[in-house]
Amino acid sequence: MRALLPVLYSLTLQWGIRAAYFPRELEEFRLVYPMKAAFLSDRGVVKVSGDDARTFVNNIVTTDVDLLTAGLARFGALLTPQGKIIADFLVTQAPPGLGGGLLFDCPKVLAPPFTDRLGFYKLRAKVAVENISDSLGVLAVWDGEPAMKPDLTFADPRDAQLGWRILVPSELAQKAAEAIGAQMADQAAYDAHRIACGVPRGGVDFIYGDAFPHETNMDRLHGIDFDKGCYIGQEVVSRTQHRGMARTRIIRVGLKAGAPEPGATIMAGDKSVGTMGSAAQDSSGQGIGLASLRTDRTSDALDAGLPLIADGIPISLLSPDDVRSTTKASA
Image (cartoon, rainbow, N blue to C red; front, side, top):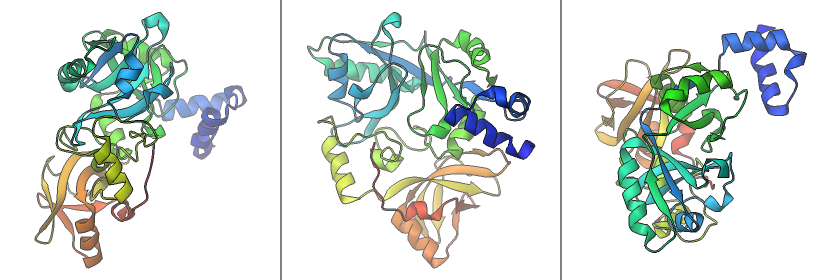
């Protein structure tokens, strides 16, 4: 019966089969595979409110915020006019009872400059922009569905496997985890989960101000809405999508003998094919990581049977087709 527990729990979550039918088995599953939560100290929150908030934001970012309702979120980014990422974020709608407005879950270190940049663009728009990272933080939840959903809870829009986010003051993170039925874990556990899902983290897996959205897989993670109106940097993004020009991608890799340092050059023979990003161990103890790779050079190396090496450590692609895929994705 133990082998069927993950299946039973998945059915309960996906199709609403009542837990009363399998009370003992589901409780055993929760004990063996507990839902986890981690407070992400590197994440901050920026608020945009006012009569023109949605129109203002929609005119400058990659995602369509007009599709937002309370309890939902979108993944997006603010770009330079040249199409490079200034800041990426998850954005959700605050309910009226909490003052309304749009809340941006973004890297904490970028919250002040992100706030300043939004303020620069607002001109005469009737909006207020605030960095509220001192009062709200981000709790990540994965490996289950919350037993109840507090205000400012939303599913991570990048990948269903990533789980949920709850915007909550840091001092209430533990209580929030207990309320939803999750066990607290450290941020390293969440990073391992993120890496296993193949989702990059800015500042480690790519450099802000230097990377284009397609190079960080934003098109594959529902971070670009190709059907919305104009926004800053749209021309470059649309051209890349139309021509299929993204020669660099962030790819999941396997590591068998330690982990190269982030930023280490990945070589195939005497040619550089990319750089190493974040790394961790998955639930089975296998070393995993993310690497920014030139897909053309890496594909050539695979065809030639050349090993990929960084800091003297062999690297393997968990899915070699990732560097050969030309399929276009959309939000």
